[in-house]
Length: 96
Ligand SMILES: [Zn+2]
Image 1 (tube, rainbow, N blue to C red):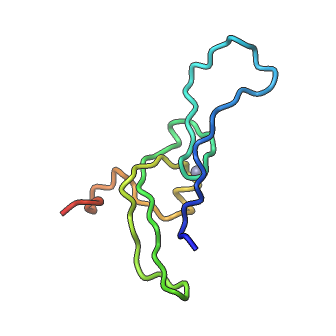
Image 2 (cartoon, rainbow, N blue to C red):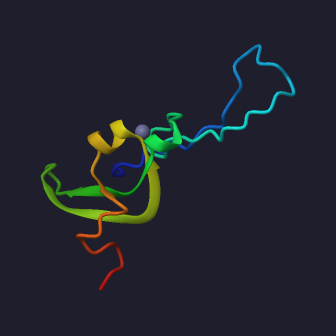
């Protein structure tokens, strides 16, 4: 079984039914790259996703930080392991 990776991508923003045609939406729709939920830009923070590595019996034996920067909403940053991109206290992925 593959670890993590639910594969949900940011969904295309759709206008609700009845939205006036031709009216331009100025605000860029942003969504969380973890759950795909549309969120205000200020709620999203750049993080590196962390995959927990487990042995055959489900015990956590280590963690792997993915090199790709993602933007997550508050609930995802609370629920899932991640490393804030602006966390300078620890060496990032690929650092010596
Ligand atoms: Zn989210």
